[in-house]
Image 1: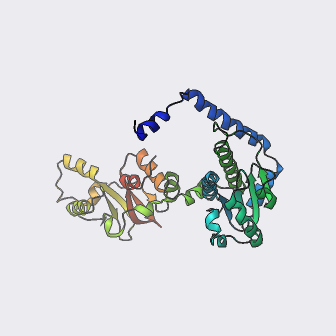
Image 2: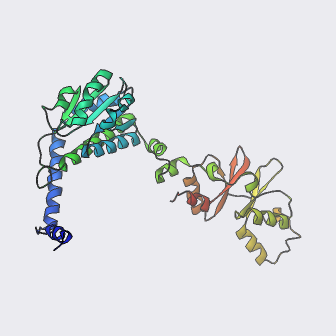
Image 3: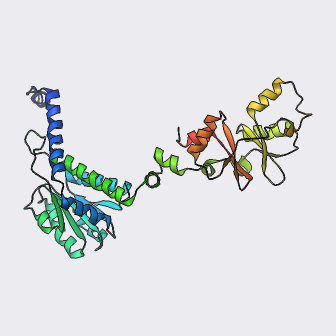
Amino acid sequence: MNRTAILSKSKFEHQIDILSESKHVFETEVNAINLVKDALDEKFVRIVELISNCAGKVIVTGIGKPGHVSRKIAATMSSLGTSSFFLHPAEALHGDLGMISANDIVIAISYSGESEEITRILPSIKLIGSTLIGISGNQNSSLVRYSDYSFVFPKFKEACAMNLAPTSSTTVEMVLGDALAVCLSKIYGFQERNYALYHPAGSLGKKLLIKVNDIMHSGHKNAVVIAGTKLKDAIIEMSTKAIGIINIVNKKHELIGVFTDGDLRRTFTRGVNVYDLSVDDVMVKTPIYINSDMLAVDALKMMKDNNISAIPIICDYKLVGTVRVNDILGVGIFV
């Protein structure tokens, strides 16, 4: 039997109840979360208050699995209004400590509190003068001794069968980081608009940030004719611009009517001679319009409510552009 076959067979030597084992992992980690929840005290409150009053940045550092958690905590804090970034402790030993200044707060996460890469940067952090917050599961660790403030987890079991691999410990580190980020965001009065500002490519960001003037057809791309224009010439303008609507304006460039491709079809069904008519004879004289500072998502709702596919945009009573349903859908905004 070759080596590959032996290894393949050895992987399945032990039969387990997969569902039972999986539920045991959940139960173990949930139990750890509940133990940490019950252990939250004034020390945690002080840490939140300290970070909320930080004049500089919040730097989160960790190595191994806690390093991955630290990166996520820093990202969550940043997205919820706390200026934060992840610092790899090994890179910190080779110059990245220069990212830290005296008015910053460093959150160092190490469940043992003795990870070499972490303990080696602690003296430098103290010399720089930044505030050090240690998150650990070991009250007597080097990390806790060096820290200005610390939070020590209560004892719990890892979900790993050997009680070795970081499982429960990384879960509670993650949840603790989420608690920090959420509490801080509420202290700042962080709102949806703030969240959208930091997530412009996300669905919420687009809905709260993109206005119709960001995506409208304007200038030579907009379909516009002056009042009194022959209908045949207006049709040519409509077909050239291909946005499904033509806007009729007076000499002051104020909107006085619209004519859509639907209106054109209805006009033809009446058997009229387009060479005899002016656009004034067939236009809708009380058009629905929107202001240029309207959010695209609100414009989309209005068009859907009124069953129209395009709508003129005005600013200071003057026509400035047109936006279509497809323009808004095209940038990823839906209702």
